[in-house]
Image (tube, rainbow, N blue to C red; front, top):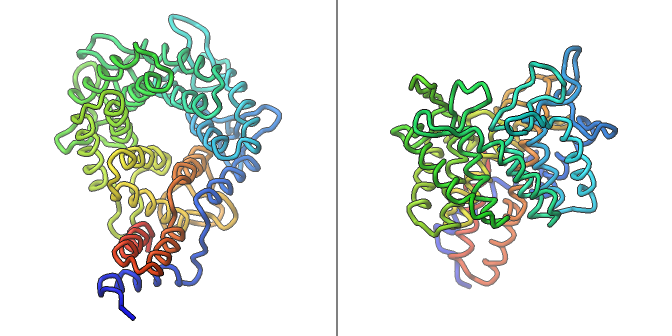
Length: 403
């Protein structure tokens, strides 16, 4: 009986260590996504108001309902849930979408979502908050084919684009006080424009996507290929780099490649992604080292890049980060801690946005094989004596699992 090649045997041995290590219970990505979504629905959701509380446990002085940013992330969780289980999550998606109108400010010059549901003079309208919602609405339309979501996406995108002016050669402000122009407002608005072009067939949005990406490249991209946070009107650039800023530039370039077939856009996406992996992946654990609430955004950009390149480095990086989170950040009492690290104290408060980011991460991974599925596929390949395929699958499993 022929033996597997030596390198295949080594890969098998390494993978078996991962599978047989005590205490490492497995679950599919969909099961993890549903578990986390259901935790959020049980612990953060107000089923009368159809809105989400920001903290668990709640303390005196907390807002009754979260800021628009946290609600926007959770909205995408419900969109994902509806994609895979419409009977379970579809009605909640509709209810929450209707309740988000409490955040809508119809005042001029262009209506848009404010950051809080409270009718106070302190409420502000952020262009990035609105861009995240546009992306969520477009995806909701894509999943449900309900044209009202597309109408709301277009309505909100008008506000986002109203943040552009000619100062500094263009760019969209962070918020209406017009003090800085940020990557976090430009990149998602560009992605939203490209999505409206691809999904909604809005011809006017493609030039906007190109214009915004080109301005952000020219103005806020640093020499390492990643993106600085913002530029003030006096020209001062804040050099701090968040994963989500570069993530949305990866995603925008991938979308522009899909819209135009311009390979320069795809090459740009790869350069940013490779620089991001170099900067933000812990080489020992595989976890992403930047703020956990941005985890799903960096992950989604890498997955969309994998979809068009089939470069397993991008998919494996996301799977390994998710494995780290499931193993070390998950609270045995339910939900996930806010910090994406190993050490946590009992009783830490958990924020909605961090927990929604984790749910979204697992929903994004649902179409892809998890580590257990890779192992099962490898076993089938071995039975066929397809040693090369088996070794490849074992390697994927090893590279996708946190130690």
